[in-house]
Length: 175
Image (tube, rainbow, N blue to C red; front, side):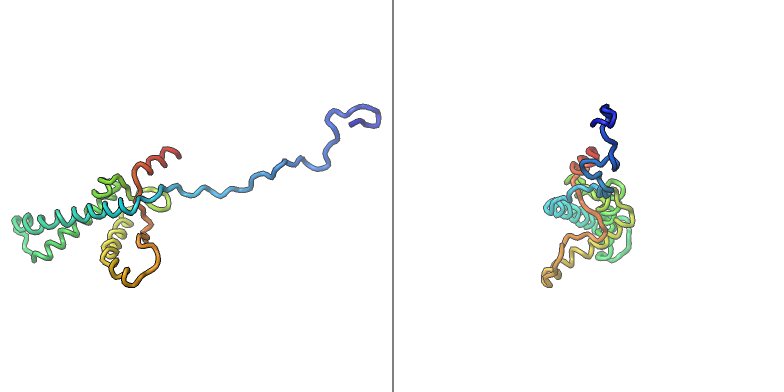
């Protein structure tokens, strides 16, 4: 552009408005959601639960009927058997998941128990809550099927999820 003296202005006319980007600047972005791997398949979960059940039942029965009576433990055989089965179940499901991140069945199938929100290890009390709910969940499934209840039968009210180890590692290495 040429001014009144006939000279060209070096940078053209000064803009009347501040410089505007050709596209709008990005607005505030929501923080990225927690990164949690996909839950393990139903088949894998059922097989792990079967292994855990067989461990508690299979090891609890000989412990209650053969080993403890030899140690002179005086108790009703049924009470002793129930205590051994539930005790082994507790050790496997709660202490195993708390210390080793998985029960024996989940460890054999390469799964881990993690929190649904952030894929971190669950706390001790949450694992106890999950174990107690699991004791009531399995016996209630026949009743649930008769009533034809809606909803997800695998919904975990403790906000824990079982994931495959390789998915958890892949997620940790990519982030």
